[in-house]
Image 1 (cartoon, rainbow, N blue to C red):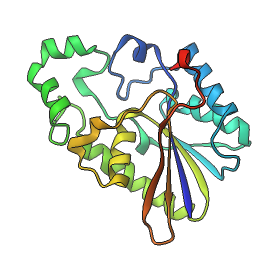
Image 2: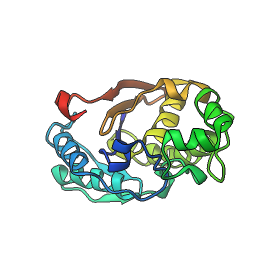
Image 3: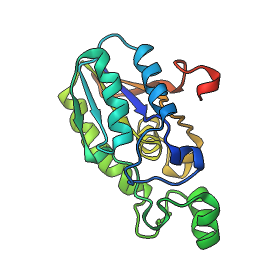
Length: 206
């Protein structure tokens, strides 16, 4: 049995202000650092073999905080970066609606076919993320490893394991520092055992 622990990064100032981050390298806020420390101190497993992270600093610092508990290095993986929001990066929902009303409507209602202006599709994100993740699942077969990344790519990964079409990607909630656990049997069959868990966070830190 292989255990995969998926973690979303801690909060950033752009999360708080509702700005679309994408691949902009936005650091954790002080609150995000506190969330990561709480996760480190209340991590759901006691044994981890390896830790991987998106190379964007908000995910990397979250991963490094967790890694300190286990004395492990963090392996940086560009394949686990957030979806590129292209022309929308740094903008708020209101600004995007004002400039691309049809685009934002499709982004929410038809994410499986939406093309973000000069950005990525969810299918492209799913493909690059799962290609690397499948390699790691083979490499760590029978072990436990962590991948720290971002809300949109996490949703595409979970859609894969749940057998859900990307049209339903927004039905999956992912809070900052939320934990998902997937176990993969020797037959390759995945089971999602934990989804969007914030058990490590008090109510005022969500």
